[in-house]
Image (cartoon, rainbow, N blue to C red; front, side, top):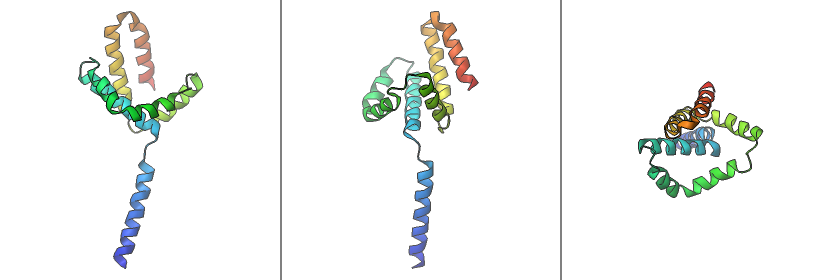
Amino acid sequence: MKNLKLIAVLGLGFMTIQSCTKQSELCDCTDMATEMMKGDREHNFDGTFQKKYMEEHKAEEAKCKKIYEGKEDKASQEKLRKEMKECSGYGEFKEETIKSMENLKKQMPELSKEIDESIKQIKAE
């Protein structure tokens, strides 16, 4: 009987911990974007990783698109950004975004001033 109570208490505690650490869908999307940018960078930004990754994660991509759907206005985007900052993987997302933008700057030197400004804003967050 004592073992049964112990198992029940441990099970309940484990479920509580899991429910507290479960990420939001937005955080899952942020992690997915990070993984995609990182893989793309590791493959020299040739697009092969991104194409394969998106094929393998179509369901997740659809969920992420729904999150961002209809949120083109500045207030909605700021709200999403604020929520993203609370995700555990946001720091890595920022780093990968900056690395991707640095690569974009090499590919499009005519936009380097605008890209530098965007990088500066991201770093300031």
